[in-house]
Image (cartoon, rainbow, N blue to C red; front, side, top):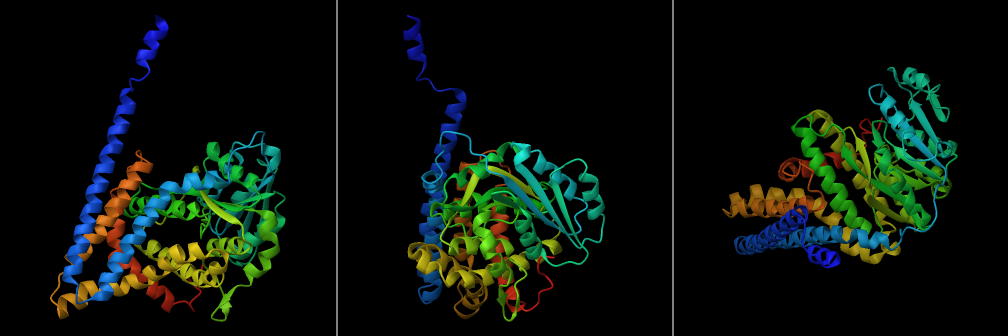
Length: 441
């Protein structure tokens, strides 16, 4: 009798399960409405811009591409699970953290301490900090940490040589099989650390990018907006790339590399030049390029949680964006030389479309906001509405993936900022490619 009662109760869903099901049904309904609205707006756009086939082609192309990325982000766990299935037995390779730093007296103590707090055998861990010519109290803080942590190695350089050289020094000194590259103001949440190591059971995995979020997320409007962007950038965009085992940039904030792959190419990576001068930005993207060039998988893991400090003023934010876009442009040119040979499908369905869209967006924005209203008397309303409807679909995916994340409304702020400012910064960055002063340290 008791068993019968239990059997009757089992199909009854808990209130929590019912709420979750209702939430997902609502998201699905809203996504359907948004997608239908996109089609309507694009149809209206086609009618309005019939005399402008370039703008019509762009709107259809970018909409299709963005929807494909959202869809791919839903599939990444299935794709990566095929190469990262957990096996019986403990997998604990030796690990080295490499942390380049300059003038990080506010953050370096926490970064180093969090490395030694990870859930991993202490005898298999080491932390290498390369103090790249700091002029503040960074060096003194590192000296106070050395007695606390016996496996902390500190390299002090009197003169600044640049982040790429500091990273290379760390790789050369590392004794670990796996090297964790951290920015000096970043750290991995200790209880998730093993999840960045586990994929390396597969010998074809060359690098793993952790899911990174701003540590100062709620500080002000600028940091909140970046928090929304970081989630989209990692859980949707990098997840979409990971579906094809081709993450194009394993973030410098927190990523892991198989040392045996990186060591042979360190000198080539250091010697990269563009327009006759050393490349001083996009170090993480460039290193990822080399791992891909050697035909290894680069993946993203949302089960590894890392945190970093993001710019909290508009000036610092713009400087960062200029540096990032310089790195993106130059390294995309480098990647284009071999991506077709490596994987033609990824090249023509993802990499080149993304490159085309990124370069075209500023021209299309000028055409929609300036040229068409003046020459054809056509309002940019439907162009703007179409962009925000795409942002709505991204936001719904955002809410589906992580319901607790409260910064999702700022996706719309980022979409607006990208439309009127960030896309144009790319051309300023390209124009200033010969200026290395805004390179990373």
